[in-house]
Length: 444
Image 1: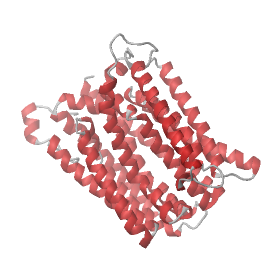
Image 2: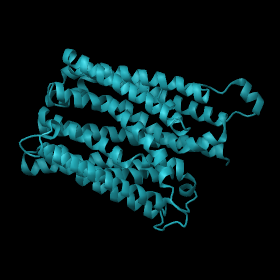
Image 3: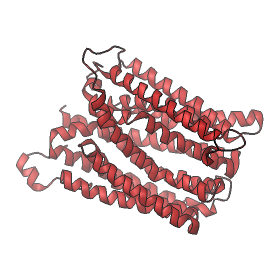
Image 4: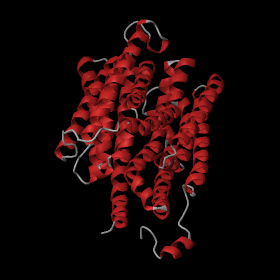
């Protein structure tokens, strides 16, 4: 079996597996959010979601793009299973995580002590405890990046996508059953426990597969080169997250935690669409560097496959959620009627972003990280500006309009840049001329 046939086989088998994992993870996360929303009520649920969003963002910041850059620096060592340099790379980014997270945790602590509004309160805000989960989650993401490049997407994603929300659901349900009450602070404490469990499980898988022998290399580590590539990747992920999360922070600031709770119900439901995007990104990422090295035809074919897979899965899911929106939102147990239009608006933005999303991935791994970052910074700024204008007028529906508009602008702009740099759009097919010149159809 040649490389093209192996790639095709991997995509066929992997697409079913990765989509199943992410759909399963979405369902598990959805039921966890429904249960925790009913237990905590709108105000405390809003507090919990703010702390959860802070943990996700902090994890990306302290990791400095280390998990994303694995596919650039270690694919041969991981796939050939010699493991040379994997420990050196991991060791360096663990140090980065520990130093960065220590600074962040200290900043959050003093923010609470000196009454910074987002972490202030009569008792310790959940964000303070959530900050302790950041280094653990970051290490888990780093280890998951190694498993992903090894094409063990089952081991890379099942523990975090499916196992983590199921563990949180079980532990929160058990705690509430025993004590009869629960606060957002206690829910975050359970999140910390499950994050540690997932990190240890990922480490066990890597050890069992012998992907990371604990030994130093004789060569001088290229720390500066690693950071030069990974740092823009980190900022790209931060901007992508801010596109999704700036709504929550601004709704809390302008309208309060109760509005955040309603918005979170709509956003969590609509994120079924973006979960598919993340799933297919995870599937295709290990192939991108190899495809770029193989030439234009390989890039066009892999891009076409990814685009078609995205369209075939995203559109049916978006239509289904839109149709059953009201009964789905009723599960949250509080006033979610106001969240229905918000959910519909978010689905539009998430769908456009997903279908055009591979442009950012190709640009990112072809040396155009700064262009992607510039576009995302501009669209995040647009999102924040629109939030400031629309939330006071339309409340959470205004936040959804802002996000969908920003995501659409980002997708279109990155698609144009993709054509400028790689001479293809997300939907580009191999031309008949190229087939005639090579005599073969790539991937067939």
